[in-house]
Length: 320
Image (tube, rainbow, N blue to C red; front, side):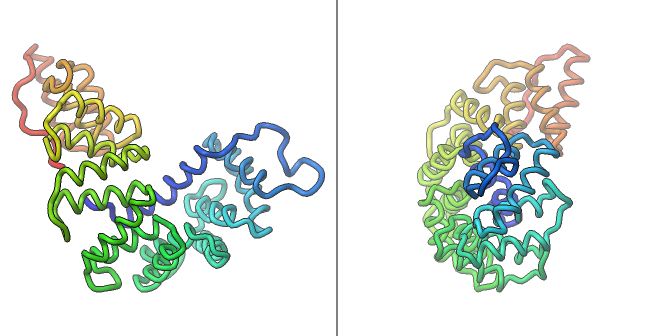
């Protein structure tokens, strides 16, 4: 399905932060706040990021304290990240209202990503009264300031007629602008529009091209969809071994559907040899995430093991 703002909210709050963390420089020396003299805000920011990478609650508290110090000096990225941490409840008790305050400070200082996050907070009423109109206003400001997340959310609003009349042409414009900036969710949304022919001529080839670009950016959904294209033959010839490879990549990123698909391929011997032990492992992971089909296949494997039967034809895999 199209990446909706609720799902996109998680991508913005965690995905963008992860991107920043991955590109940050670790600082393992004496904490800046323990050193003499005036601290450089960028150095303190990097130091906070290195603490957040640990996912340790104590380190997260220290990171938040560091970021609050730099945020009060007007460091825009720090203001934004303080907002994210307070919204997620990392380093402190979750406080969406306080998160909105920090996003607003950063946005008013011209930090484009915070404009997009404010739009999402307004859309879902997190820490502020829900308002599609205010959400669109912030998305437009963020998009005009060059934030690809805002562009993607604005496209979704146009596609779904939220706060404006449905306008697929405008949705495609914004998805494409976000995609051309290398933003995975925008690429995925644009790819899906091509895949199902919504507002544009259907083209499996174009869909796959955008999913592949998304995958090249390390996006789990794009990676899974490339695998699905090879599995189903959408925009490319069927190649089960290639599909299996892409599903493995997506599963390593934590993409949920790929875990079921790998279990299914091990179960059926598609793109790999039949291996019930491996199939069971992936089905158990998928079932733990709420996949009902995985539970059905686990029961079948249990029955087959009890009767020492080989895998039987078991229907089609998931429809994507």
